[in-house]
Image (tube, rainbow, N blue to C red):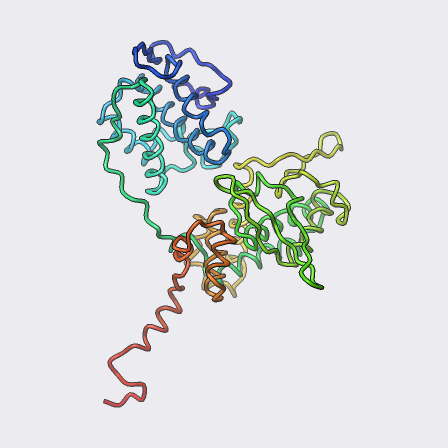
Length: 399
């Protein structure tokens, strides 16, 4: 497979696949598509109104299609053995230099590749990939484009609701915040100060609101609204999230003060002038060309890299300061952490503070309180200490 094919855009760049195109002439076909790319595009068009779902499904089928093209296989030619081969490939995508980039890039970048880690997909990501592809094949069968779905023979295990490794304890999280504050305090140029403010805005926005990375990109700064309750004014953030559902999240005054600094130092506008930031995303990217400022929407890949840089900053901070030595055995958690980890950390910390689960449910945008219950796990250290109170020996140590 040529590397330029890794940048395939199913909607913009028709590709001459020669013998890699499956031509279908079924008299029961319910779609006009007569090759794999057109059929996949037709399936994807159902989700065009839901940006996150569309992006996730496109990512999975695009990666699978590239793998099929690399093996000169069409969708119609695939058997169950190919499903198993793709599973093994996703867990060990070789050759790495062809398929893997350890840094995430935008799909439009020439450096983009389907995998962001040499170990391939995690168990939960692999399960999502298989579920998505099975859904695609079932739809194509119903549409008369394919005659069978080999993914139906695959045993797909249920996705576990285990987030014990996807959040940070309050003490190590405080070290992350201290690292961000230290980075801000030591900024000695205007550009470094702007970048430090940007990182503090990002980590504070995600932690104080618990929003998803897609919600930070697809919602705007003018979604911050002030409402009056009696004599008191309160700030809320209105978010359009998964399934285009609207929810409003209480906003801490700390975040509003930080928003002013973010506008002034990073966006370079009057911190009290809201009109100049109308319609800007909650997180933006500022670039300068010939001394002219340009504010653009940040891509998901760029925002992911900013967040990873925050955790890298925290790692270096912990290694350089002796008082954080106790965290050095847990630095692997910071390597794994992402925007979704911050979301899980938010709800876990709120649950630990005994905040009403109904409020956490509404802030998180969960449809059921049972989803919110997964954040009721206790930190291992406290759980271990409290569990030792249950013993064979009475409290007074008498027999």
